[in-house]
Image 1 (tube, helix red, strand yellow):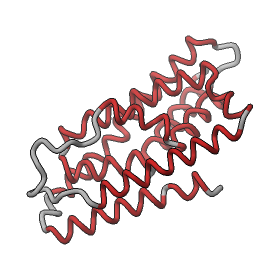
Image 2 (cartoon, one colour; image 1 turned 90 degrees about the vertical axis):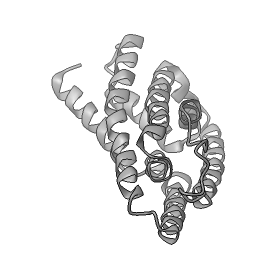
Image 3 (tube, rainbow, N blue to C red; image 1 turned 180 degrees about the horizontal axis):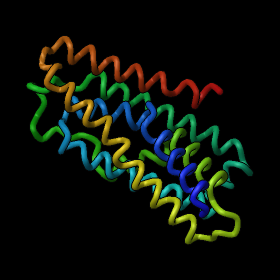
Length: 198
């Protein structure tokens, strides 16, 4: 990959990873409600799960959506319904002092699996492959793109957990925490608009 193309791809990976969306909204809420360390499996699940998705798209899964747009419409409906469920979970999360120490933030497998029903993740993966995969690069180039994307994605999304963890000490008041959780749930619902109604 020429250096200018690599730089453009890394910029694309950074910007699409760090901008607000379902993953980052959930990570912010996880940082507030569970802290940094307990949110790390969520971070790794997003980055590795998304990397695997990029490989899948590069191997031809993305073509399914191009050939049959109804599949993408179905994905948007399923993903939207799941995001609404997650928004409800965030809005009704137990206060930090009431939460069980065994309470469960999103784990690695759940976060990795979520990428496959996250319409924004599909758009990002298809964009990465269609715009940056060198012609005739083959699976080796696909795997390289996926690996680079995962390496850029992990620290980018970790920013959101860190911000949530920082907010955690300011949200010890039950009312403030409840307002925060409901606000995060609303942001998650609002993130559906460009994905479902464009």
